[in-house]
Amino acid sequence: MLSTRRAAREHALLELIGWLGVSLVISAYLLNTLGILGSQALLYLVMNGAGAIGIMVHSYHRRDYQPLVLNMIWLLIAVLGIIRSADVVGAIHLISLVGQLALV
Image (cartoon, one colour):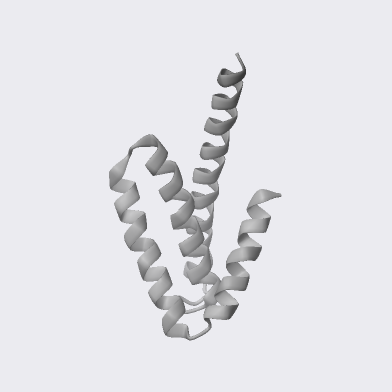
């Protein structure tokens, strides 16, 4: 019975991680579309990268490989944008903040 509860908690956590990832990617796109965040803005890139990671974690555990590959590429594009912006330290700080917010 304990393993059933643990499995249920793990499933719920993976679902939450996946939905947080989706929320971040959609929010970034919405903010960009509304002209609030530019496509080169560090926050935009971090939101896309962190969102891709959340979707990747969920997809990997579900063995759903199409979204996994798509979001691996999405993450690579976000990382390239962060490197191109030359604000890698700021990005690491933002990523840690996004991670802390996701755990609250």
